[in-house]
Image (cartoon, rainbow, N blue to C red):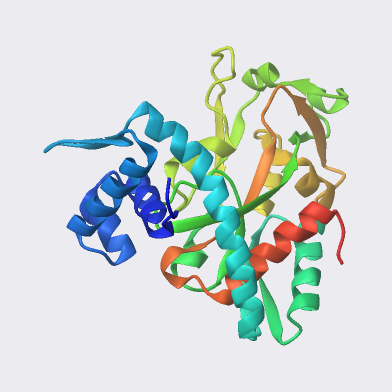
Length: 301
């Protein structure tokens, strides 16, 4: 096989994501022809075509899809190792602004504690992010990185560590019949209007926070649209709809007028650390690594 060239792998990864030689080259600060050369060299090493291209489109071959699935986590692990050493060598200092959505949970707290232990000369500033605008603070450079509800499909943002997978609950008024249940099935959501999130958040993100149909295809009535968690819980307490919340957020917002009932048959809620691709720094990489290490250990070093 010969010497493995990391630049060839980077060219393939960029092309697999952009599906365009020009955009892949711009991302790597290379010419389009240089990306093509690197891809050909990689295909020669592999002994097969990884990408099909013609005048109209670029797409991965089946072998290219398999190669991408295996390569991406290996490359990310390698980069994380190199970035960790680089961050330590640079002696991370200054201020890191960290946004969070929902509640300041134990996973984030443990990650921040570990980050401070590793980099005592770097301070952190915590900023609450509105429920209705998960990515805006990152785009506006109000925070360096943010812990937000997933999904995240923004091409110019990076999704780092994914964590805080929590079962979902349904917030209902305490005098609603659902409040007497020990748990509810996802199909029960078709019986009550579901409160959604309005605002600048992308449509795909808004739809993920309030189902439109159950897994069996039963329509879920749309309830009021809200911009904040407090507004949503007020609508719930008033009996105007129910609201999906992860178990950890529900635990932090218990009140007499609202009851949180576990939901079965619904995918868990997840949080992810995101930052802008063009503003990535050693501080952000070191923080993401600290979050990952704290989660892996289950505790702070």
